[in-house]
Length: 286
Image (cartoon, rainbow, N blue to C red; front, side):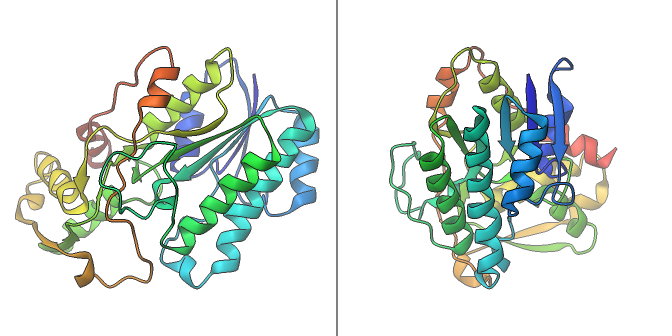
């Protein structure tokens, strides 16, 4: 199998590269080697490599900054996604695009399945939803995998931020009224690889996220509790649970973002065994 991977230096891209079967031929691109907003460059790269599958793990993910950098967010998350979908269609390749739970407004307090209507609250979510719609309309062989609260031992994420700040200050203020499922990028990568191994390509929307529901404050408490087993300094960290209204940020966020994984889990041959958070904490603190 020949795969063109974008966003190769991000959390998911890195985890995918680590887990791809050795016999698959991969060309891994970051924003420097392939600007997905440049239509001609995308078509040239796709035509030259002629992949069986294009996986788009590239994204503009700065949620608060997107509120003022609207053009850039839409250029990457919408136009870039469309460019890749059209290029995939032109050569008859599958297209897998990664999206987010922030296409929802969080008002429905039940696990969110693929049939529920999206209604993003912020520019980031709007740009990601635009990318979904454009890709699905441009290429019939498109799979959108929505996920949430991604973390890993790579890149910039909540776990690494908490571990860093926990050594700098004993007092942390973390939001308690936003509920989601933290997702290890390695588990998401494994889910995508298993989709690729299916004989028949699933099309349309799929959801995949971690298997534990919690608030950001709960997540922070778990991180520090596990980290304290490796470093006593984390025992001194106090997490103050606050409301979203008391936390100043530019973008509105959904207060509920639990994704229903059942459709994807029923498609793949083996259920995903979720990686314990402790494994990632051990890697980061060893």
